[in-house]
Figure (cartoon, rainbow, N blue to C red):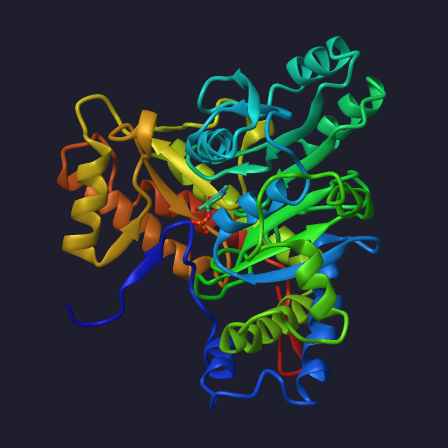
Length: 399
Ligand SMILES: Cc1ncc(COP(=O)(O)O)c(C=O)c1O
């Protein structure tokens, strides 16, 4: 197909030109005396993305899944009880991973499309007077359903119960795109991957760990080697790694952090919100609904859109790709065939998203959905036009 393809899956996201160029380098010596001068500020600057001053940041060659595994293996022992809510494919997969490690997971099921049921967490924590629960898992942004949960409220529930459990948070599809406040929310381990808000290829698991969680390592008996925080910390202290780091991706990470800081994290979050809001308005104009059941759960990084009766969402995704070169996210597991997803995170602007909306609209019409041509695009355009910030063109400010 001539022309460019359009990538709107929730990771990998588009990699900015500056990041691609930063990775187009000759291989370097990761044990050279110059390497720490690059690594130490990188690990330090990563803390700004997590909004942590107290935490320690780690970068492992791996993906978000490795981050899940590192979080539990460094802090828990076989048989420990973990409290977790399941309301989408990713919250489900983390629970399954915990079980494979021999943890006892107390699962609170919620409808797919809802967020973490904080009141039920509060009840479970208050009832656990013996403090059997050693960790609380929280998926900040459930990518399968486009649902963002309130992590500050989970912290409040822990504090209200006077409960000492660790708070382990999956921020794979939120961190660097949606506001995340590790210290303020008392998060003990926060996890992300390189291929989403950090705008890199897949290949890095980025984890931030509180002093409390680091101290738990002493008692934690789960087996770990590759992703042992202590091994990593020992080498990182001097700006090195215990094994061969993914140097090219680290160079890309440096460029990506520079872009995020140049834009300003708060501006990055505001941009994501504004882009997401345009998509939500388009969905409403199509006469469709989101999988997310209430505005408080609307995700600013991904919208899962429920297809009309009689339309197979998998066909939408297949046709959008084959006919228009547009990659949309498929519905996973319980919502397979029922939703398709438009991801709106990373290196993105209004006109890029117009292509996704136009492609989704054309595909829906191709498949016989009663969607009016241009209806979603029109409302998104108007919303983005009216909410645009003035831009500098030479010396002139253009509203
Ligand atoms: C919320 C969430 N958690 C965890 C993962 C797993 O991450 P990875 O695919 O990088 O292993 C994903 C992947 O999409 C995700 O969206």
